[in-house]
Image (cartoon, rainbow, N blue to C red; front, side):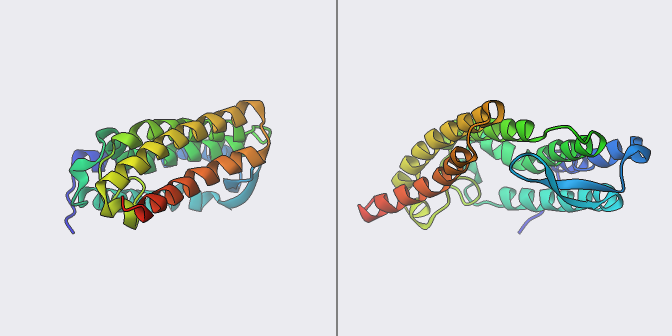
Length: 211
């Protein structure tokens, strides 16, 4: 497995340390522990010490970012992937690191802030973007609905990804609606389950039909 270091990998890895830089400026204002997990209502329910959050977690995210880039760059069929999804996949770790660390910092500084609206809306937007490009994603081993049946048949792959793209866009819209209109949590959870289960079931049905 080749590890090719380029400007994109260096820049994306550096971005994983932006929260550290931000925390240093407000270090004295931060409490002894910061939230890293939130419940369905947006309330923090998991914490780590300030030192671990600032000086340890960014290295974990940076290492994960390097690992993701190595796998993507060494995919034998990487040229088949949609360029947008390919680029998004390589930047997803630093982007999420910055956004969610920023949410954690705000939650630590301002106890009354509700993070659920922002998180759900962001997730919905990501789902819509991915859903729009899934039908354009050709067979590869890194991105998309990678199942034995989709990887075995190009027709199965294409049909499964067309359906998946539609479902992901609808689920993204539901998530954004949940963020701003406080839809029942069951609707949000059902949409996520449909995103995962339906494409798998559909792909298997196509396989049984010889596609």
